[in-house]
Image (cartoon, rainbow, N blue to C red; front, side, top):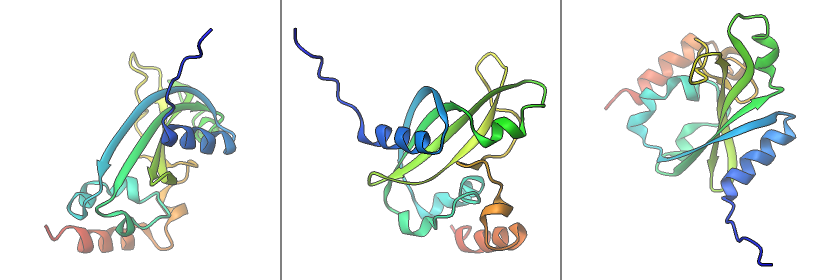
Length: 152
């Protein structure tokens, strides 16, 4: 009998291990997106970077892989458990650079035909809002973000 030689993507495995260590139960893997982070695109990524503790400047010009999973046992499962239409599942997008998890986002999943996210902004990977992540008021951070990245 010959064993199948299936190549496992190391970024996917890293993201899975990260989520498992957080205590999240992986329901499914949705794939990944790969992109190069450019300074001029950061103006469009405000909601993602507002919930990251990492500074995007150190990743400008570098490849980012976004590993996408559906999980259970996430903090948003508790927060949204009483909301009508919530499935108890959360989509998490794990951001990886050079085989290191640098952050990510999470959104609750609704009971739509396609498992659509509920009407909510992205939270951090741990289910936190910008005010819980940023070291300053969101309005101040937002103004600084616009000043820094809207010059293109």
